[in-house]
Length: 251
Image (cartoon, rainbow, N blue to C red; front, side):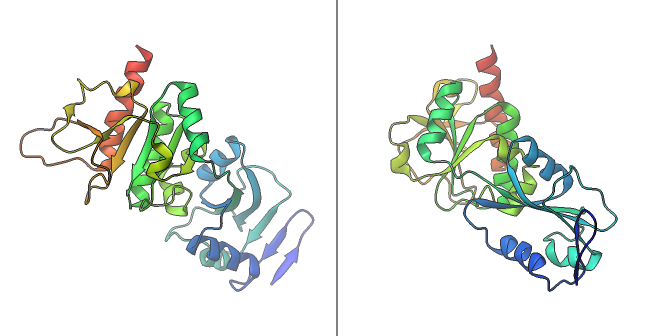
């Protein structure tokens, strides 16, 4: 059932086309669109200037802002549309700008920051956490190499708390980054973080925990650990590296 009240549509059926569209986007993202879940993520997207195509609010919950493009879903319709076990009552579809590698490089150079590069970081939770940390540290841009999770996928967006929208994000190939010199983060064998001039690098590359870096000619930087500890989670290593860059650039 879909009915229209004085200021909004109401959808009761889990088989409604609006519900099915949310489910399709959750299963497979369409270029230029992102599925947003939770009031904080939706509010961050709005604050970042994204165009919200559709806002869905569970019956009884409050919308984070007013929009004409709003629909209210019954509890059963909302559960069918949401990807999470305990949905927070707000869903949205937003338009995102798919930046080019040149855009990301230019944004980094304008802020005199290394470009943050993800190399086969497959876990969307880690990708989202790195995006959140990069935005918090002040990094302006991020490039994603093949084999990495989609930063605009719903799980990554949720893990970033919407902060991915503060970054210029581009999909790239190594050939797109040929002009950049840089450091790759490695669990061992690199220059200690305190000694490596990463703040002046063209890029900082974060690789897969399972497979490491796919490019072997990068200079390496290593976060020294207590003896007996083999490595850090890639998101934790990214936090240490990115905030060290922030500290040096602010000095």
